[in-house]
Amino acid sequence: MPTESKLDDDGVVLLEERGELIIRGRRHVAIDADSFVSLLNDLCGAQVSEVILSNIEYQIGKQDCQRIRVAKPQASVIAVIDDLIKSEAASGVGLMRLKLPQSNDQPMFMELSNPCIKTDIGAGNAFSFSYWAGALAFLIGKDLTVKDVIYDPQSDVKKCRLVPRRTN
Image (cartoon, rainbow, N blue to C red; front, side, top):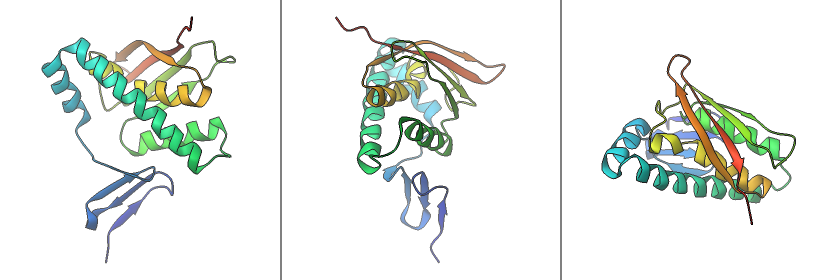
């Protein structure tokens, strides 16, 4: 009998007999993200690894939201955000909370409890928050920059601001 763990129709599906992990309808690979970030920092240096991972995560966030919009064109922005929050939790990233401003010109505040990456150095700065910057940029139609990432080991929480980029 096939073994299938299913958490959510649009979330995470584990097909053990096929060796597949499906998140949001796309195949993923479970990795030790903390070791990945640490090794990337060691290989490239903190600044370069942060830039690399930030750009990759930003584009993936935008692409994921574009796919969600194609699949669910009637979904509200809040519904899409809720789906992404559930997917992040189910995939082991942590528990994300987001404070949306009244206006798209103001910063957004993000808080990640029990983050899988417990550092705010180098690529650890970019992991997850840059994904969200890309996803939210797609949803609101305005590019965002991750600022002021901090990790508090006492509370096991990472925080940041997502600030709209200025356009001249």
